[in-house]
Image 1 (cartoon, rainbow, N blue to C red):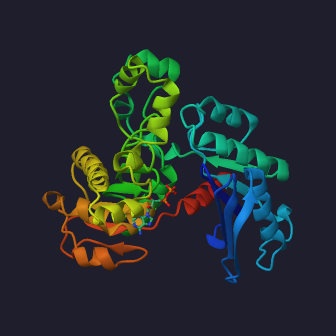
Image 2 (tube, protein in one colour):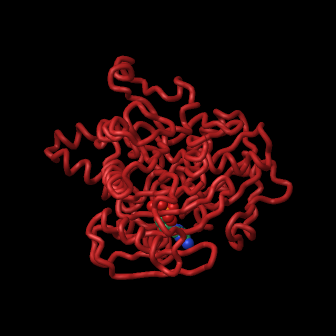
Length: 394
Ligand code: ADP
């Protein structure tokens, strides 16, 4: 069975083509800077190694980005298909739809339910709606499956999902903690299950442009740092993460328009907001190394927010067997990992600073005798999606 997995970012499109159930990757591609004239497109045929990278592409919208990808997939030297009819399904790492939490065929009803939450996931739902619409037009009749990021968190008990607000708001408006990054955290849980079997306590830290911490017990999510919207939890690249809700009415009273408040929280907050340097941790770390105090403050605030969630989840889990770092920052920033792990000796983490600096790919950063095993595991959300779509098609 051939499954194409599509991961849509606010300005990017990432694809992986799988043969299932073998889980063989046939091709990978990505388009960055959708909406600009200097977009970058890259494609690799995973079997032959044939690859292409085109810079300065004029890709004004998702439709042209997807057409370019399909053209290379079908017509280039590195093509893996002769005809789109060979494809069995397209799977999407969809984020949030009102009333739909698992793996669903992307019918008009499900698309309408995604539209209902455009205001809750403004950076994610609109690009997905566009991209899915384009695929539906280009591949009429082909199975389109959405794997909603909230699915993995359905096992969180209601007492942890509820906000302490009037209960009717939960009943009438569905106000609750949904949790996101389900594809990433469930992939990490699968990886740990292979080593630990079915009984373990794990904290998974997905640290990327968006970040979240997830408490996992025996393969199931039991708590997570993300709440109702993707505006919550630890600071993100541009988004604030947790903040006191009463800051909003206060700023309104001060005369700041709602649009400006939302723009500040969504686009000018997070690592960018504190550092004033960049939303990219590489640049912030470099500025911090050069003595920039705001950059140092941002790294400290970021690591402390993660530390707080690990402490809270340790208490909820009643102990810990595994701590895992994944995502662009989790996989690549030895500084962030060192800041966090070296502060956790009292939880049974014997941190190995040498392994932390030198490892690549999947590696351990704890000492042999560490009570808690600490790993870096590269994210592979696409494989999680391919597995879910495959199961749905059985
Ligand atoms: P997204 O959530 O958008 O998919 P990624 O998971 O790719 O993002 O993570 C992007 C983040 O990873 C950026 O903040 C980037 O700075 C960070 N990152 C990537 N490589 C490094 C590195 N070598 N050192 C520190 N941070 C890095």
